[in-house]
Image 1 (tube, rainbow, N blue to C red):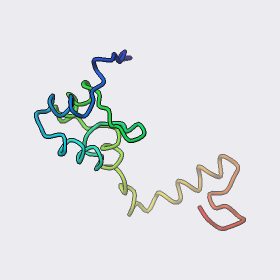
Image 2 (image 1 turned 30 degrees about the vertical axis):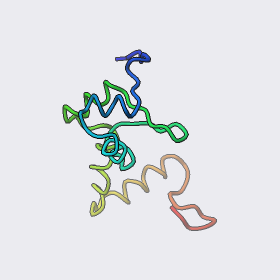
Image 3 (image 1 turned 90 degrees about the horizontal axis):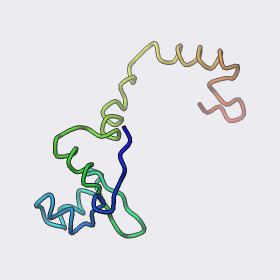
Image 4 (image 1 turned 45 degrees about the vertical axis):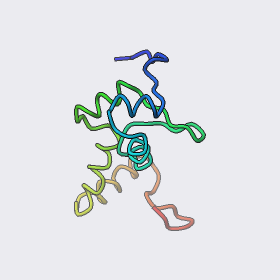
Length: 102
């Protein structure tokens, strides 16, 4: 579902901290650590009200989902044979023959 972003939905740090009822310092710390949905443009942070609302509801964002799955295949014995088959079907090796890297 597409959502049109309006000027009123884009919040400054002062507006976002007031919306969340936390200090601006705490908000910026959360943003720097990547714990709250935010975007930095040059040296200025901006926040989407709808993203903050979803964050408050506890819905994980795509980054959190990705990080939670990172390393899921670490001990999977079938992973490398499966990757070899995928690259074989593509007609190229998994390992770069020039430098030996995957």
